[in-house]
Amino acid sequence: MERYDAIVLGAGAAGLMCAAEAGLRGRRVLVIDHAERAGKKILISGGGRCNFTNIGTVPERFLSANPHFARSALSRYTPADFLALVERYGIAWHEKTLGQLFCDGSAKQIVAMLLEEVERGGGTVVCGHGVTDVSHADGQFAVTTTQGRFSAPALVIATGGPSIPRMGATGFAYDLARQFGLKVVEPRPALVPLTLGGDDVLFRELSGVSAEVVASAGGASFREAALFTHRGLSGPAILQVSSFWRHGAPVAVDFLPDRSAEWLLDAKRASPQATLRALLRDVMPDRLANVLAERVGQSGVFAPNDPLGRIADATLRDAGGQLAAWRFHPNGTEGFAKAEVTAGGISTAELSSKTMEAKRVPGLYVVGEAVDVTGWLGGYNFQWAWSSGWAAAQAI
Ligand code: FDA
Image (cartoon, rainbow, N blue to C red; front, side, top):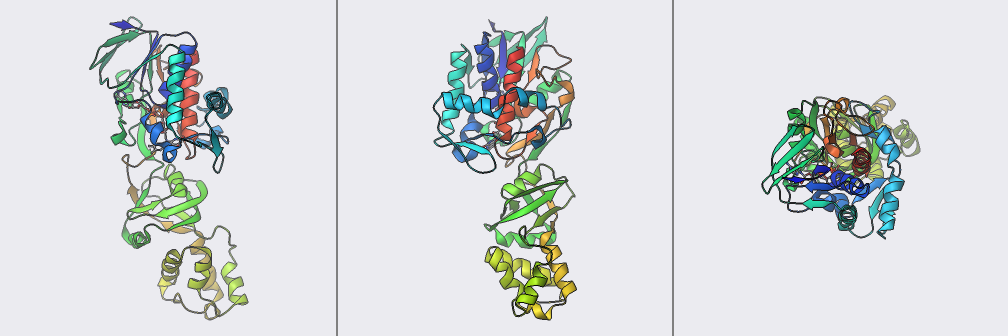
């Protein structure tokens, strides 16, 4: 049995940050991962450039049964702190949009940086170790893997959530939580494409078309691109609202975010010969304009190519209203296989928000995506991984 001060399960974003910091604070740390290499999700993140933080990080941009839980960790290890680390390693970066910071080069630089930090702190990372048993007795956690047995008075669960299983993601954190009597908030796919059925299925013919919209669900609205896919809806605006969407609820899409409610009436007065189809083609891709013009006119009251001058004001007002709040009725999501993150997870009620330690199991910590804290799209989830990993490291 090899003894350490802390064992971290999971060599992802949160686990590596935690191990590096705890090591730099003088702790002897072992990181165990079942994958063949560390930081696999970091490597594929941000299209290979890793959107490593968001400078607009505020607790309100995270979902959790306890919306205040993330506040402490996020305020003690901030985007500026991570950026300082990135700069210390000479990693070039840029802000893309909406406060999202990416590497200029490659996400590999972030993984290399974290591994070097772990090494600097004297920590050890072992990959390809399947964890077969975890037990706890006399203040010591014993971890048995396919390659050996290890023990420590502190155990950090940093094995993430089950989104993208082909990357090695598992629900292992929840199994461990249950083993130690910790509650788990029902995990569900988040930042995930939505699927369309029923009448909405006709929109699938728009596969590949994208447009800037305001998408709304569950009380949240996002103005970004929406993308039609062969299964339904995707693109940043849809991924964002997917985290708030619940089965059975509609998603409202404003296809005319820059037009006033009176736009069609103004257009009718200015050019009565213009058609709805032509007007829409001026502000969105042709294929989308065609489908929307046809479906708005589907009531039979007017046809897509009718001159606006021949359509009653009330009908046009109604059409404008529909286009500004198009109601889709998703019949599901593309599931964990395509979800960028998992919402839900180990209940924050079980953990100290300052140290991430389980209130009922001293020495047991949970960090990163395994916790019921889920960020918006745009670097927030990595910031949570860094902040929560760092917070636990201060307590180990
Ligand atoms: P993470 O998943 O990073 O690490 C968990 C580790 O535990 C893995 O190494 C895994 O192999 C290991 N593990 C799992 N089960 C185990 C077991 N049973 N035994 C041992 N080890 C086990 N976020 C963001 O902020 N910006 C971005 O650009 C992106 N981009 C992005 C793209 C894609 C395609 C995905 C899928 C996700 C993102 N994300 C993102 C989300 C981000 O990757 C995610 O929130 C963090 O990686 C979570 O960090 P964790 O360390 O908690 O888990």
